Image (cartoon, rainbow over all chains, first blue to last red; front, side):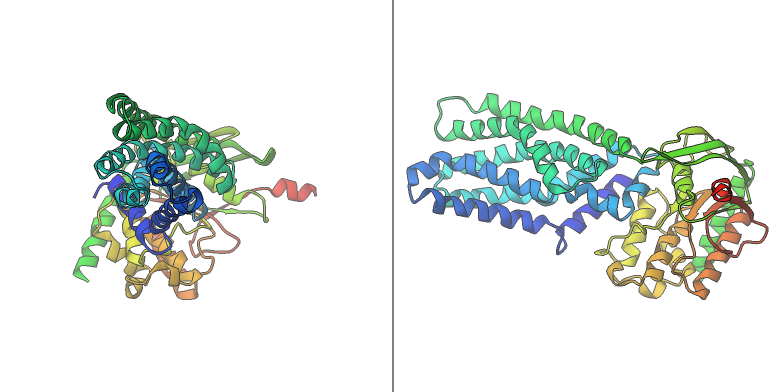
Length: 222
Length: 227
């Protein structure tokens, strides 16, 4: 097994185990989305109109929930030192960790989203489109969060800082994610352009974030 | 046992390969700054293949800092680390084992899985894992989650990396801490084998760790004398 695959599977196993956080993120997503109908009242037309936005906000907050531990755990138990002491670039290691986080935390949210869309009276035909936008957009959330996780380790500050750092940078993802989902439900704007931009955001962040996060960690060495 | 013998023989063959290269780790007027304060300055030493260097000094003299600096985990403020004879395209840290105060273990994974991950991460063969666990008397605990290990057992599992993955330089920070007498003897034997095979050891320690003929590098002594 190659080194990166070993790291990916280790992080995945740790996340899926009890206390690992994957189940917590999914439950948090469920609770946030389930709370909305109680807050806005039983107005079915309103719920179906804001449904995609609620699902996206829920997924955003749920994916952030466990992100602050992504690198901090390894920094605290000394694993990060050993991860850096190989010819393998730190960038690749961080990318593998981010992928493991996406698989354990965001992929369940994507799979759950059609079920939760029922709570928000979203049209049945729109459910696959919302799941598709989440699948295309959540990698961007994870990778942007990776930069924040690395900074919070380098600056030795905990999780609240991470949310403050990361959330402003997720605004474009949120805009295009919700725009693509709404295009299917209310129209008349086409689905293609915002979805393409969403994919571009994910791909660009997957390239930039590991480099930025590794730079932050190296800078924080002291 | 046949398997263990084979693994040990492969390991010794591997080590003889190192000796032929005449490796040498040197430091020239090394200095390190942490938190705006110079921890130490002017540290110079040379360690050749088969030699051990014991780094001693009072608390806070910078013993751990020196090891982390050699491992590439801290920036060098002044001076130079030289490394001759190893793989030329790899840094000292990439050819060194670092066993620090943190054991780098995941409590949720079993003893074997913890070691197996570091073995795979460093690109070493998985066959060495059982031999490494046996060398540190952890073979009976292989399937136990690391969360249930005692401090000494955790330290032994961290030290098992030294056996499972072959690297020429060992940077050991208080390697005997929390170890019982039997484990200290086992570690001393591993270190002697490593030196005999042409490896290098730099260990920060407060007491003897069972290597005959090891040289001592006392850091922070001048500051202590001035105070």
